[in-house]
Amino acid sequence: FILKSQAGQKTNPADALPLLDEAAKDAQAGLTASAPEGADAANFDKMKTAVTPLFDGAIANDDVVKKDYDNAIKYFQEELKAMPAAQQTAGPGIEDTYLLGTAYVQKTRQDLVNAVWYLSRAAAYAPEPFKDEIQKAAQYWYKKYHGAMDGFDQVQAQAKASLNPPAGFTITPAPPPPSPQELAHNAVTSTPDLKTMALTDKEFVLANGTPDDAGKVWDTMKGLTTKVPGKVISATPDSVELAVSDDAQQSNKADFTINMKTPLKTPPTIGSMANFIATFDSYTQTPPMIIMKDGEMPPTTKPHAVHHSTHHTTTH
Image (cartoon, rainbow, N blue to C red; front, side, top):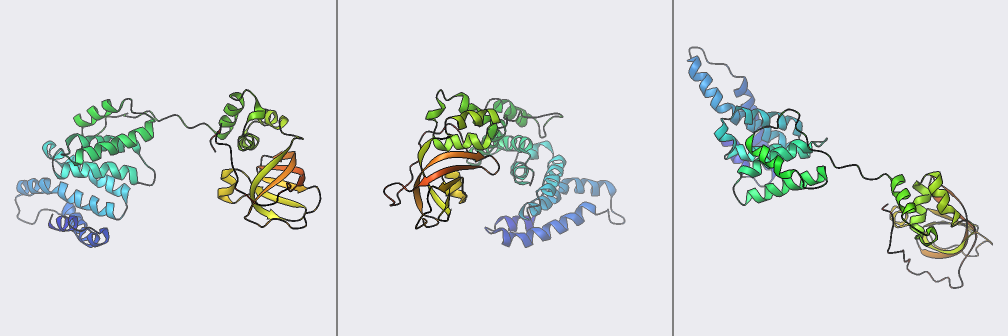
């Protein structure tokens, strides 16, 4: 108890760890201790029952600092189970219920259903200002998992009434986000005139759509001559690779190949922004690439800022 209290006064986890390590070592010894010879068995068992939650809590807190969240969960559960009901909703019981909830969030494979339960229970009994902070955490993870706040009040009421979730308790997860192929299809079906679709959105459909959806978009592009702005990824006199979409520019990866009509006397500098006038010739989905032919520099070769469409029909 003293070592754990001293550790709690440290602001740096590294300073608290030696104290918690010592406390956990002593706690493990306490949990496995047998009654000394000649001791009154009933009194020994009574004492051990009283201090077992403290031992479990010391081990769990040590594991939290070490980021061993699975083991921390095990000992927080043991601690709370060993506590009398009145202690579960007061002082260390509330604090360690909260830490149990956060351990479910922090473990490698998050368990947000249990996290929401124990955070909600801790919020139900915590005093202000901690109540509001814990409540917001419970709400945040509930919405992240479920996708909305409907049903949260019922979960909160259940958690307040019971230390642990009942058998079979669950929270309905939010539906998975649309796949890139679904997003591409939605873009095609929601655009009355595919010719008006932004170039970056057309590119997204070509890269991710079904053959039918990609074909519909490509029919509006093939053979069309247009200006293409982008970031130069590589350049030779005969061919220039550009990053045109925002994603391509951020990842410094080409998504357009401009094959020149006549060789360039001075290829553009890699990393510069450049414009070309060229004709859509073909495309590949893997890797995503739009190939253009008969490329030419526009009359003015001065690089200028690239302006993308502010309206996007897809997310990518």
